[in-house]
Amino acid sequence: MARRASLMVVDDDPVTLELMGEVLSGEGYHVTLARTGDEALRLCGKEHFDLVLTDVRMPGISGVELLRAVKQTSPDTVFVVMTAFGTMDTAIQVIREGGYDYLSKPFKMDEVRLVVKRAIEQQHLKRDHAEEPEALAGKFSLDLMIGRSSPMQQLYKTIARTSQARSTVLLQGESGTGKELVARAIHFNGPRAQAPFVTVNCGAIPEPLLESELFGHVKGAFTGAVASRRGLFEEANTGTIFLDEVGELNVGVQAKLLRVLQEHEIKRVGGNETVQVDVRVIAATNRDLEEETRAARFREDLYYRLSVVTLTIPTLRDRPEDIPLLAEHFLNKCRSSGTGPQVEGISPDTMALLHGYDWPGNVRELENVIERAVALTSNRFLSVEDLPARICERRHGHPVSAAPAAGGPVEMVSLRDVEKRHILQVLRALGGNKTRAAEVLGISRRTLIRVAQRFGLEAEMKEE
Image 1 (cartoon, rainbow, N blue to C red):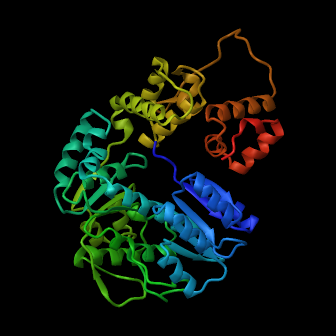
Image 2: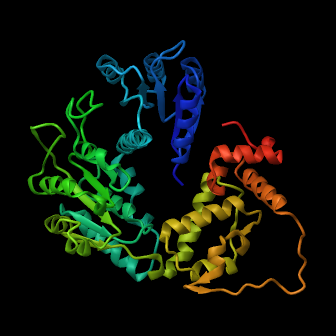
Image 3: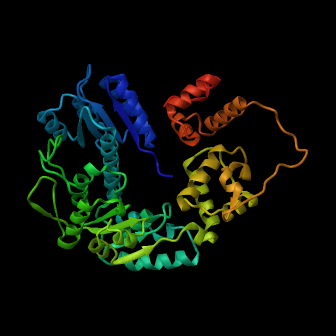
């Protein structure tokens, strides 16, 4: 599994600090909190952070001074500055000192999520393209796509042919089938492999911000636009942009995307000048875009522009023979990342259940199930008891009768004891990591801490 990005939030307001920590932890980041610039500087001396989100005006070291000091020893750490004292001078100073972006209080949490996500993606993009071309090709080689079934063999051949072309590609398939993995394989095995690959989840960006994210904006285009900014199409220039969930675009943005595909140029929001871009577009959707065009929810001319080459990604139920390969692959990933205890394999009964399940969430669901099982098991081999109930209860859409053995011993314990044991097992399996344990248990980090205190399990949780 990919390493979670490590973030630090710095703010002398405890309410803002706790809220930001909760929101960003909920997005899957590893978050550290600091109440002063001095404390943040000490923490940066002990640990590397991918991104620092800091207030400007604080007692002691200011946010800009913190940025300047950390950049000397960790130039690749990304800084986003937030302040209630927003001025043009501050914004310009932040950018000049190497800051990535600037948030003016009060801001919306959607805006925070978006800025952080984009900053982390840009950092990953720079790291990817600092690698040797051979390393990149290997990282996204077709050999690393798992599956020997006939549908996958056909997909490999189509990817190999498509990667050498310049045509726009439309990837169709259910959620979790691996559309982004296919898009990356097309890009990194083609002539644009050394140029940027930029991903955009069109359904995750709030509609008022989407046009600015894609095409950029000029200074003063709207409230908060304190400086001109390039959009993601300009970031992807000479490379590839992957538009996931393209069916979620509103009609206005659809028209501007059509212009990019036809004229190879964009206009920033609030601007009159056109900017030439050379970008290959790969789009993906789990919607039926033909049906969307008939219902007038998606432009027909845009659909034809996007679907020059159309690839349909097979579902996992269409290639059940690949399930054992994928399950072993994800188990090996857990081993190499040190997630939970070391598990030697998967029992035959467990593999039979995995093989017989319908997998509505496809490959993503299978990976999640294996990771969860590894985190919770106390066995050398994953057993049926390590699987979620939904998999044990249904095989190819039919219920499985699983009555308990007659006369078997039943342990008479309270629900409170069951809950306490389960939380204790998860915390120990994850080495006391509160954030990961909360994710596995499906609760917030704050709730986990409160429940652990109620059960007297504070000693099982490590400091993060």
